[in-house]
Amino acid sequence: MGTRGLGILCFSFVVAQCVDVEETGDKVHYDGYQVIRALPHSQDQLDTLHTIEDDVEGWTPVSGMTGNVTTVDLLLSPKQIKLVKSFLNCNNIQYSIVLHDLQRAIDSENAEDRRPSPVAEFKGSCVTEAGISWTQYHSYATHVKYMECLSSKYSGQVTILTIGTSYEGRALKLIKIGDRFGGTKKAIWIDCGIHAREWISPATCSYIAREMVENSSKYKILLDTFDVYIMPSMNPDGYEYTRNSDRMWRKTRSRNQGYTCRGTDPNRNWGYNWGLKGASTNPCKETYRGRTAFSEPETAAVRDFILQRSADIQLYLTFHSYGQMFLYPWGYDRLDHSQERELDRLGRVGARAMGRGYTVGSAAKVLYPAAGGSDDWAFGGAGIPYSYTIELPDTGSYGFILPASQIRTVGREAMSAVVAMLSDLRTNRG
Image (tube, rainbow, N blue to C red; front, side, top):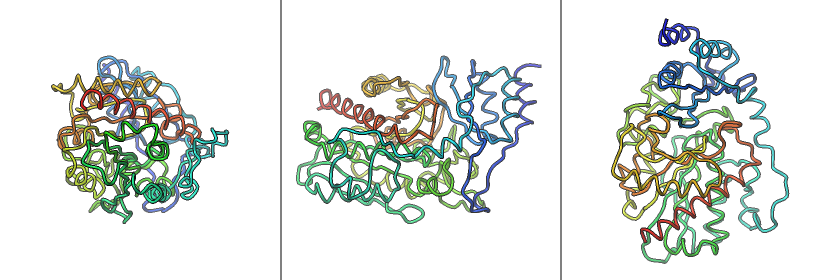
């Protein structure tokens, strides 16, 4: 019997053990859950691995390999561990255990980093007033309070904007950093928190905002050239749900008619080649694309805001986690295009500035096709010349549960990438 036959045989052993928090209302715990890393060494093995994607608790590509084969992290419930390992063994797919107990990692993730920091680094009235820090992960309300303080204290430099309302009624807020009374400038857009469980992402956006506002003298030349829009959390409903109910939740929190399963994957919901490869039609799946493109109020609000300014926006950056990758269009399919070499060039400028190993390439080629992503829409739909998804650290030791002690390091690295890319654009496209 060939590999395909064994894949079908093993597949019958795997049964998803999903937790229905809609019925129980209880906080989801992940005691005994493991994250294992599968290492397919051929496209055939990767295809076999894909057959269980919908039958495990989580399926996360981590890095590209030769021949478009990808390393994949699998989140397994205690009931799935033995079955999936048997499946991998009988298909000769190598694997290693990355996290032995997910709940243990969750319990220690947000312990405050009490290491001494440089005196001036986090000093400032807005940090104190908002109760924010980069030694812990904070609520959406705290991020909003920080933005409000920045716009009040630095009123000539920072504007806070409300661009819509989330499904559950939270104000969708961002800040514009740039002289309120200056003329029209080129601009860049930075968003974070599209996927709810990726906590390092909103923390990174708030770090970048702090640097650009409270240490603005360091970046005067760049801020004289570019306005900067920063949205720390595009999916606040999902983010708060991960804080209070299910740490591993990914989607929005909208209701799906006819289903008890809630939410849409906001990074499969954008209207550029929406609904093609890698986007599920099943509302119970993590990659559910939504009933239509831009069905979610969150993605629709960002679309409308960007389209009003797309002629000025030169660079779109969206921060995700994890895997340490700098990805550019296309994501919907493995297709070449005329701007790919230039996107790769600037992506490598940013990746080098991060100071640790990042994989650079088009999203579909490095990983696998996934239609409906924000970066594809920004590039192909809004016509923004440069568009990137940046997958922040790490490469799987902690995955989505990156300890708060690493926020400052990741924030500094991300800021370095932004500065390097803006400096390049200023020089080459000024």
